[in-house]
Image (cartoon, rainbow, N blue to C red; front, side, top):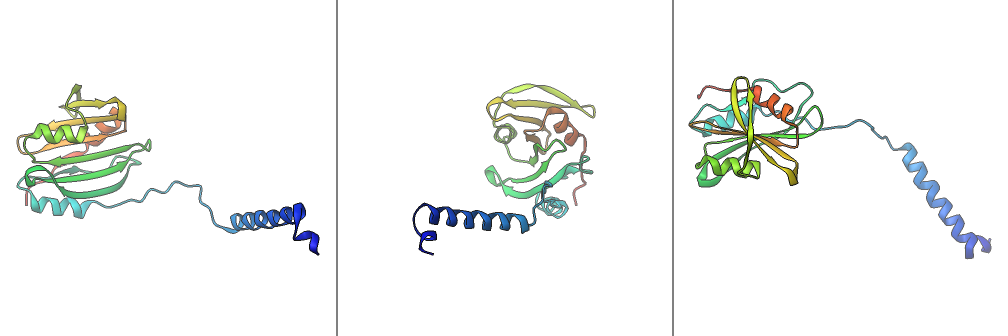
Length: 176
């Protein structure tokens, strides 16, 4: 009995017992191979945001097909302005975020959200021109639209087509 508790054989037996235990644990533990992205409803956040700002809130009429809304929040921006953030995992499983605020100056808010102040052209979405911004080192694309009462920014690692898809679904909800 002593030879199994000392020397090389003891080490080998202990190692075998540990590996067998780990293998048994992995065998009986349920495993999922499916991706799981938590889906968060943003309707209450959008409604609450609408009660705190003096303009009609912009929000997607419906989410793009196979997109998963996975984050939403209201935050305070510069000069006490409120900011609404809606985050998504796109159909291509990239990240996209929609942000809006009446923060002034609008250029400062747009530059902070896009991580750059340099325009990279424009993109037509539903007959409306959105300014494109691109930050190469972060692989971040942004669409910016400055309106008289609010600035809209759609940004993320999603490609221009996907960002445009979200922009096309935005509609302003009446104040009230």
